[in-house]
Image (cartoon, rainbow, N blue to C red; front, side, top):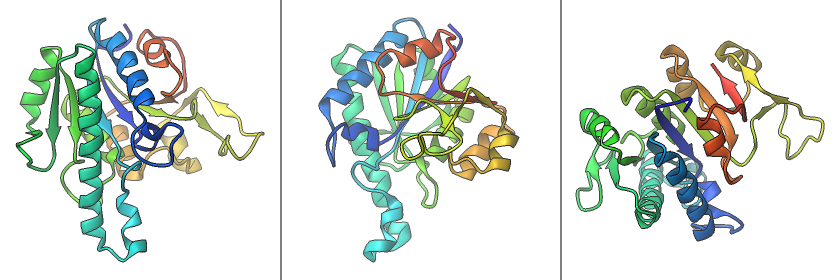
Length: 234
């Protein structure tokens, strides 16, 4: 295996599947099967998932809700998604732990770095919910920070496109895909991969990022086996 411990960043919007809102059970099942496949091979898996299928903090100001309040609402949306993926993973026979940046002991453990690392060492899938517990930080920033804290080998950013392109491939048929980029190239060209806080954290701590299509069955297995997929930023 190319990696021992990974941080998998999943998009909340991807959980909608073909729906316009909420959680698609078929998409959850596919994710769980893909994660189980690599977990059974001894890969230690940590997960951060967004909440955009339920609520995005950046929507708050448009609807007249205070930005800070909206960000906390978005964090709670990530916990709902985290609980859904936790339940599906456990249905497939994996042991999991859900750790939250906001205290809610009835459903999550509080995030404690040493405890999170120990869970991973024991073969449990660790899901990080509620962001880092503070407003103004995205789940991309959470993914970068948690990856650094638990000493993950790589951040795997699962999206609905198969890498980083010169333009939006869904809008521009002439967009070309990059196989490799450096952090400096991404900053210079202004490619919108992660927010700058998340990106800078990975850059300064030498944590590579791979952007890939998580919705294609088997891609996760190929990546951790060392196959070149998506776009590597290092």
